[in-house]
Image (cartoon, rainbow, N blue to C red):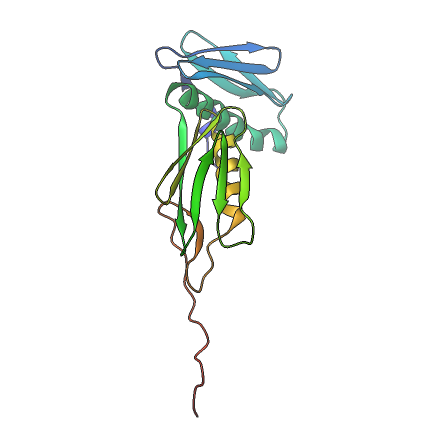
Length: 180
């Protein structure tokens, strides 16, 4: 069993954290994030450390321990450095363009798909690469997954929207007119 929850989170320079009731607030140079901790978890803030502990010893509490610690660590990293996911467009005529704070995708449908940027998320488009940036790791990942879901990569030709570096398993298509 992993013991990630036991490790303390070191708050780097310029990052502060406070715990008000069950809400943890992390502030840094890029902004502020809030996370409401499960009642079975206890979070304490020392000088430059953030620690998680289990308030009630149940199986579910142990399962939440590592998750809570990972979420809080991602908050500290997010307000300090930020997060980004890059997606690539593969396909003839597939395009992405920005219209204000909305992303417009032309990916082989009869209509273009418009994805609005939630608060705290910024899109950038360069050629066939879409970059999703923000301070909240969960939100960045969810928005990137929503963009990918518009046109998932298909296994025969590999067309679609994929994460940068994602490997798409290819399938062999039918052999046309095979003679016996």
